Image (cartoon, rainbow, N blue to C red; front, side, top):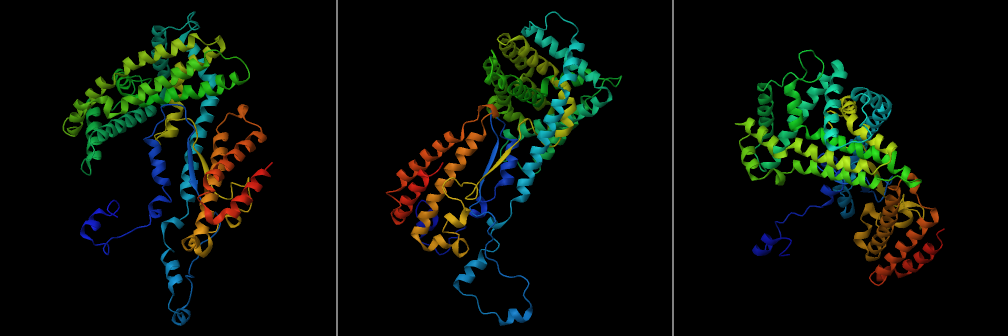
Length: 484
């Protein structure tokens, strides 16, 4: 008690303590988890998953009728002890549907898939455009860091002009995105800031950018970016660099690494490491630890002196220097690849500005840097049927008495605890296997071996402790051995 309720323990007064069921907060954190995606970018290759637990899908809980007339209410008896408990649970948030949250995730996934469809459709056109922009250079097959930097700048500037009158809209989106990024960086450096500080900072940053002539993105001809915009983007557009590296990672996975499962693809591992090293190089520049204590001082005065924040951020992140480092990493990896794979990766790296011009409007407001959809997996008795089918009704005991059954029986609690471990093990094995590439799948017999090993390990660990359900443990061993 001293650890859990120290104040009440010191005063020997537990009567005033208020205890709240943790499930009110913990059972449906989808919205918080979705928001966290924006702030949890992957530094390495990942498989994004939302995994949630639903112990009794489709089984409604007890509810009082809400449509009784006044005569029925007048004749109703005073509710007893059980009825009071059931009534008290009728509005607990754990009973709220999660369909809205799942639809939000599905919507995000659809937008990512649409983004991938657009980029896939642009491959041949972008490659032809880049080859045209660069001309028939004899050195395209022999990149060096210096050449790569030159080609990258040429592709970006000429690509902006080739985009025509669609570029200003794209440029203004980038400007708004960078403004938001600077604002979020300031907020990370000023924890505990007063309410309204975020809006004040953003307004101050935006006004400063307008003062610097960045209200107009395109050059006087209306084609391409103005010189001031080019300098600003090169100094501050961190998000573009991150998007480019994630795009390159997907290009490598789909057009090079998958091929290496069936045929030799030299340099694929080197390129993989180069891409994610470059990604980590950019992502670390978003952290307050990287920016240092002097940036925290400037951030606190961002509303008064936004120019100092903008200029200090440019010096601290040194994106042009980072670009040259990344050019070196990519170039070194390209040297190890065969000619056809080198061409795929090189044109993807140089041509990304054209992809970005086409796809950024699809993502505005999303803050998405990744090209991989978020997958949703459920852990439920209905989904874990290797040992026994029938779902919750065939395995769980606590679902009785409106989910209060386990409160009144030790054996019920032991039963549901054991089944929870077994169901969880099966689902996690299946989730892990589903992350494998299509060409690297395992036979069903191998999956069965994994499941049996996990199930028996759980029973070995729990058998001595779960003394009230030993007959069930023995029966489960027989059922597990019968799995085919």
